[in-house]
Picture 1 (cartoon, rainbow, N blue to C red):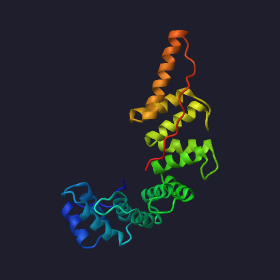
Picture 2: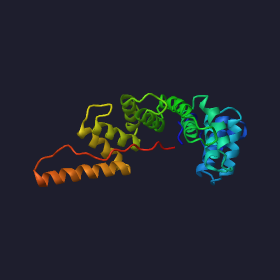
Picture 3: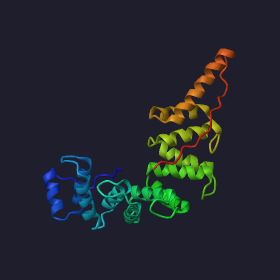
Picture 4: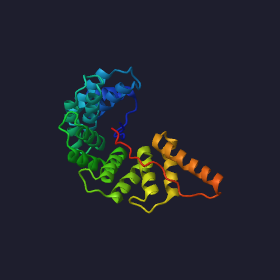
Length: 241
């Protein structure tokens, strides 16, 4: 879970003092250091303590991290209801990571009543701020027509935005759109280009589709010396949390 740096200190000791003095941003970053074992021994329980101090001061980043701790049982018992509570606090302040994570909880029904419309609402909020996983998940909803009107053009729009941020499942799905002509003119060269980018990141579906493509090319060359348009197995990657 990544957030951009909002403040810097000259040393870890300076940050620690600021945290002790009640600076919410310093408290949040001290929690991050404790969670990651950066400049200090890793201690998830102590990280939660500092996240909570900052979260209680309405620091959105700390609220998101605290939700993440409850979601994954880091330093606290796993409790999806608490995760949803803290994600919501941060999401309503506009934190894109919290908006995405709250969307995941609504999609999966963890800690909240399952509600795909709410999931799409929060994915949209995060996607509009450039959160790549939210952009990918939103693309899947538009491609499948679940909750939102089916629109391959909208799916392509969101897949492309995520793919350009190196989101491998989005790159694979964008390749499939080019391969099948869904939302874009059919273009096998573009399909292969996006499959290659996803495959280099280890996406199994993209690797499979590339394998089928090159096997088709090889078989065609051996038989006729021509290169027909290959057909690969269609697949839609499952939105990932």
